[in-house]
Image 1 (cartoon, rainbow over the protein chains, first blue to last red):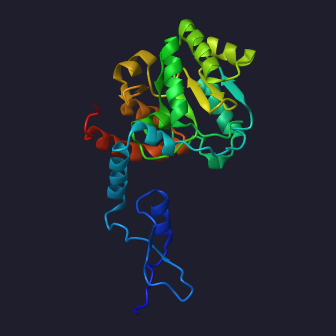
Image 2: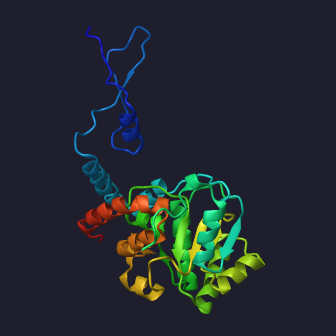
Amino acid sequence: MEAFVPPEVTRARVYALRRGACTLQVFPVPSDDNGWARTYFPPMSDAPEAERWRDQCRQQLARDVSTRIKYGFCHVHKPVLDDVALRAFRTMAEYRAWCEEALPEYLGYKVRQPPS
Amino acid sequence: MPEQKFTPAQAEELAAAFAAEGVDYLFIGKSGAILLGYPDTTQDVDVFLPVSRENAERVIRALEILGFILDPVLTVSILTSSEIVLMKGGPFALDLIHAPDGIESFEVAKARSVWAGGRFPVAALDDIIASKRATGREKDVSDIRRLEQFREEWMKRPRET
């Protein structure tokens, strides 16, 4: 029996799997001596990144709004921002100033280019 | 703090409660884009509200229906149209915004708004992009190019029936 050689599991393929650009498939391929099935990542498209992104957009547009919500919202605790149940700011300027002052830089709330 | 993400059922409840109370509102920000089909994730629901005492009273009644605890600080903040109210302690994370950057008024945005799934009013992608561009924040700036590409695909989509 010919040996099965799984494709290389690269960071790019794992990333594509996470964002749904390909699927993880388990084939009843020749197993090893212990009977393990093999996992296989289909080849990624050779299309440029931008075209793969547009394809992702088209796939999501084809889904109904409930499915978009189901997969579009997640809970990820953001330190400081999520530590208090309620914050209200009289003006957006006060809010922006608070973001600059209080939030960790890695959250991305700090201004990086002059507002247009 | 809410441990649950915003679910399709909660979205339906929000739309129903806001409709029942006659709330004028638009989904905005990344959450609005997601409703329109933008393939990304977020945790907060951003709602754009007009500056209006009557509408604020309707919002308060709708939030009670949805299970938000309305303490005096929250109530006053909504009634006085604080420009942004971040609610992290309710059934889901909800931001109420009265003056998003880059959009001249609620009325203008509403005139350009679209419906997602026939029941969720969403600010136009042009306004969502303009708002993100106006903030200049790192997390928003990084979204703009992808939102512009998404907008091109959205324009080509088959119309919802």
